[in-house]
Length: 316
Ligand code: SF4
Image (cartoon, rainbow, N blue to C red; front, side, top):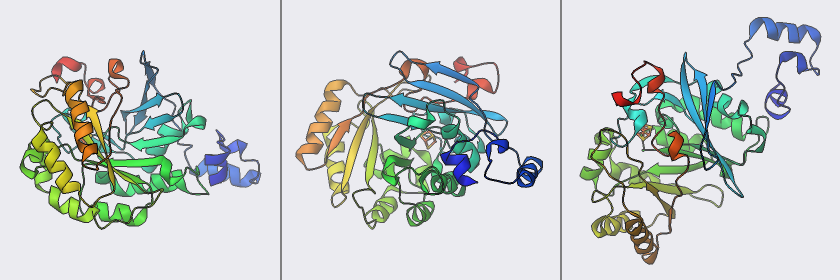
């Protein structure tokens, strides 16, 4: 049955013709089909699409990002988020609900482009490790031979780092991991990610240094660069120091300003300086391209708060 669902991608119990009529009837009687088509799609001038999927009686967003040789789906694991990161629109929405594994997988399975997806990143709405069991279940469905058969190197989970959930994640899954670091100094990082007073930088770092990496299991750092906040030579020097001994790439990310925050994104020159200064010290770094900003699909901009009540964006 799993093969019919995830590999043949049938769209009703009736299409499971390898099952007897009576079993199909039982499935009809006992189970809901569970696939939910998208409610709405916004299309960016750069080709990025933002899909709105119903989940938990509310909505979540998934961003589909096509590039020349690579297509990526950025999916959500929660409606809203509890973590309260200062730079994030999802945080402004507060927390509404955890998604089930079915609702996470629905974003892949019901995506019109789902059949051609090479990469999946858990970087949409929510903190995946705050919804650990459903995230792990969805990863199993995505990467199992009996499921959708995605190679583990094509799936990345991003997290601010929550202990002990990270230990479970690394023990029970083989996909890639992206740590949202954003500042190498513990106290400064706590200003950006208030919840990190509970799950501290040094504890996470110590744990990550124990993980055995392979060609397929890699780790990266997500680093949104804010002008004058975390983009100075002092920050680069500390980044190099704390990442020593970790085989890890730093993804420098442009900040897309959100209403009501004094934070501003670093300019191009500073991003290039950071990239080169890190590389010169043996830390590979890239500046990530910005995608879907005009439809609020870019990094940190996903939010369905406007759909919860009619006051929309000016309310943020
Ligand atoms: S950045 Fe991620 S963890 Fe932080 S509030 Fe936004 S969705 Fe949650």
